[in-house]
Amino acid sequence: MRAQVLLCPTITAYGRLYCAPRRLHRYNSSSSSSQFLNLNLSRFSGALFFHMEQFQSGTGSSGKRGMVENLKRYGVISSKRVAQVMEALDRGLFVPVGSSAYVDTPVPIGYNATISAPHMHATCLQLLEDKLHPGMRALDVGSGTGYLTGCFALMVGAEGRVVGVDHIPELVDMSIKNIEKSVAASFLKKGSLSLHVGDGRKGWQEFAPYDAIHVGAAASEIPQPLLDQLKPGGRMVIPLGTYFQELKVIDKNEDGSIKVHTETSVRYVPLTSRVEQLGGF
Image 1 (cartoon, one colour):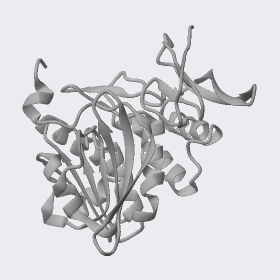
Image 2 (cartoon, rainbow, N blue to C red; image 1 turned 120 degrees about the horizontal axis):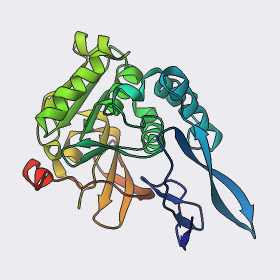
Image 3 (cartoon, rainbow, N blue to C red; image 1 turned 180 degrees about the vertical axis):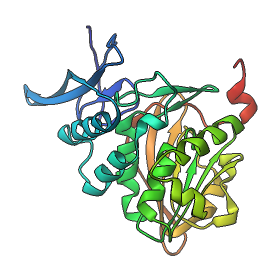
Image 4 (cartoon, helix red, strand yellow; image 1 turned 120 degrees about the vertical axis):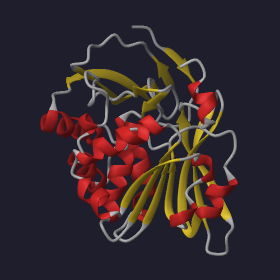
């Protein structure tokens, strides 16, 4: 296993690019679906480096519990509330049959799309946690198989409102079926959680404004309709860029002005049109 060391200012990344505060190690993994790739921080010559360790991922309740415990152990999850939600909503219900649900890696879900790696879900949930209290409203753009949308529903409760939008009808159908089998099913039945076919770049005006907006694909620039639908005092998390991407955190002030900061370097599929996404599929 050979590592290429590059400069990198962050500790969270997407897929199989993991960043330490001063270094990024790129590696190739040939682990089987029964192994959980994890990262261990150790201090060497005054800098922090990641070392890979393997853990059995398990299945069902043991798998999701092990996934959360390892994310906590390596500092990805620090919030008790986020840990509880990710353990309550079984990721295994939201990946294709036979996929490695609890391995810290993105999983293809068809239609040139993926479900993000668990550490990215945890990162985004923690960034949005203060905007996901009971009674608040959340929009999930590029909702895919519905996992993060379901997490939002558990956090805002029946008195809140969660909307998932994806432009692939088959994925929306899949996400509804997935949520119906999960602990978030009651929110779907009561109507406080809904999933829709649409161009997520335009948001979902019907239930705006939103306290929290999550975008699950990389945009070249921040879509204006999403800024318009973000509530004053609200927060949006969105990856920006093409080849080089950064996870941006956008806070809207009460006067409507915005403040933007960069959380980390990431790698997401592009936020594009349905036709472009399905090209060659």
